[in-house]
Length: 324
Ligand code: PEP
Ligand code: MN
Image 1 (cartoon, rainbow, N blue to C red):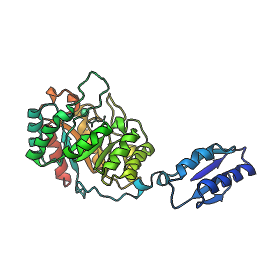
Image 2: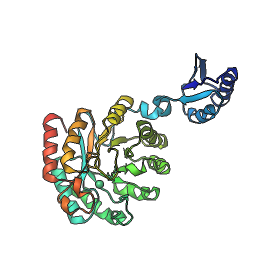
Image 3: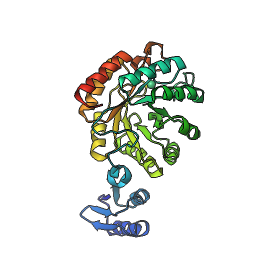
Image 4: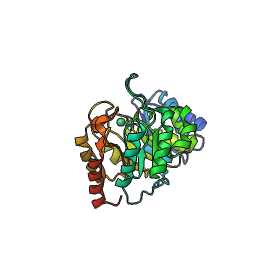
């Protein structure tokens, strides 16, 4: 960590920083340079509480922690996801925005299996901007998911919106999705971590890499061992695109798999393919994509939901260039 000093810094500033370090970080090594003090330690968990105390010292301009110091588990993560074999493959998780009725969901699921997707979107709980909008079937849809799994053998990915859902979801789904709106729900992250279930964590619109990776760090600290990060663009309700800088930075910092949601980041089926091609060039591991047998009849997100012919074309074109 680097402590930057301002023009009012004097000998007392340095001795105050040293005293604080000796109390809060007894094993850390402190080095005074020109207008800076650097502190290093093999363990950096206690840095988080040192920073605000240090920044309150007169003469300290600010304190900077590196991403490796803030997110040690994310930065040390291995390049693997045990639930899917990722090696050299592009993974497709596809399905409707939400499970709406049995007939449509099962028909969609069976075709998706034939198209070669690896897992189904299996959303029962929908966090909606309007309290009057369809909120998902909730656990009333559990039986539909059971049938979809029996008929296709595909893995299920289900968004969890509340800690009270976790115990039941353990028996229904394979991977818990944490949606963009809940990336900052730290109690949810802790409980999902404790569940030890595989997780797909979506980046909250407009959050930066640091905040995204700190949320991933919560999951890893509390018990998650199988984690996918998912970029989903910077707007919740209007058209946008995937944030390429975020993907590039994540790939530089961590080995955790990175997926892209080309649907919510495009908000329009015409733009989904562009988002997919961009993401492939950036070296992502897979996609979370909205597709349905009849998008025009979908209660949620029909505008950016692909029909299954279009999804087939996309999967085939990716297949030609890459193993999927
Ligand atoms: C979703 O993938 O079902 C979803 C609601 O997307 P987001 O959390 O990215 O808005
Ligand atoms: Mn949706």
